[in-house]
Length: 212
Image (cartoon, rainbow, N blue to C red; front, side, top):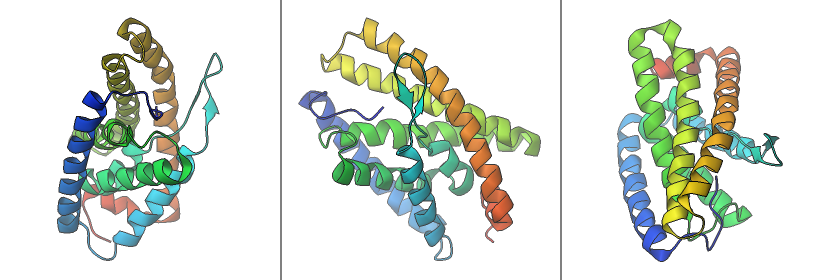
């Protein structure tokens, strides 16, 4: 899912960088309005957890592998804007220090997995909350799956528009593999949430909008 260096044309990565910079800047502003000093360290812990989880790959099929993106996990606890900041920080550190994704593609990677992933997760999980407590975990699974698949589709179009791979090849390949990866993402996200809530029940109140 991390687009390597040189895979995107300037006509693609330049506007994606601008859009992501504007999106993350706005998310930072909104985060300052909704996050108090007591919750800021928890955001750091979540960023560290997602960073570590993204470094662990699991085999899927045909020699491919996947890893947790973490957008749905962050949104389930912190909501939309702080989660965008968390995801942007994780992807920035990975790109700068570990070359996991090209610097020219950083804007696209942040948009695909961070901004879009959090927007999709927020929409689905928000609907689940409106339907009641029983719908929370199913909505998290669906949000995680849709965030992964949606990011894969965006990535496929960006690669196709850059001339890296024809759309009729890259789109089916990305969607088939990430349909499976998204299912794993949903399962892992729910297990991670249940573990976090069990260890620290006060965190569970965050997803209901209650400050511990």
